[in-house]
Image 1: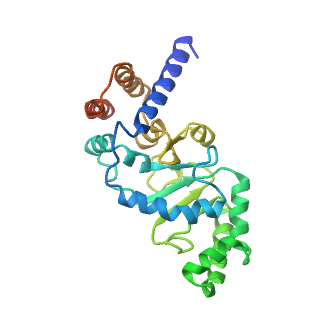
Image 2: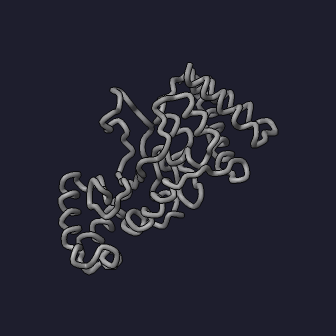
Image 3: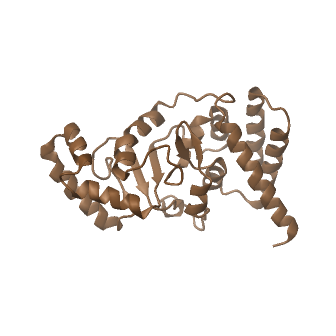
Length: 253
């Protein structure tokens, strides 16, 4: 790789990181009515975090993928929604990526040991008589997906009406509607760059852009220039929408 390209990569990485810091600043942007996101997060407290033995505040254990990150930044979300037809108006599901083998073993033990504290807690909600059914569904799910996908919601264990899933890897290329040749950064890289917002770790804003639109090299550099210009000045919260519209225009081209 040429020295200039290395320099470009370094500047791009630093700029995206600064932009994430800006977006994570609660004084810069206020959260929109994200009732569906909050409901999903609430259910995930037990069905994901307690099930895997993870504290939401633990770094390096997990990240929340997909569109959920955008709902923390309403102006950015609004502009992207205006620019691109395929951006959803709401978050219909919650995707959590948990790469650690230890955490998946904890999940397995929690669901296969009828005396586990986790199942006792679940039993108080759904009734103890229903626990054997849940255990059987879990075992079938574990065998079906090789212990790499966990679905406690309507398409799995039926412990919730919410669509919540956990994976060992972030692989949007495996989605039924994915285009051929879709490639994203390695799960380990996305995990390393995850950003803490509201006490939980989310995929970085760069990875959301990358996953949603698959930025080309020229588009990426154009967006980086816009961000750099914005972040190097004395930006004000009300200026953010103009920035986001410019980003949207670049991506649309």
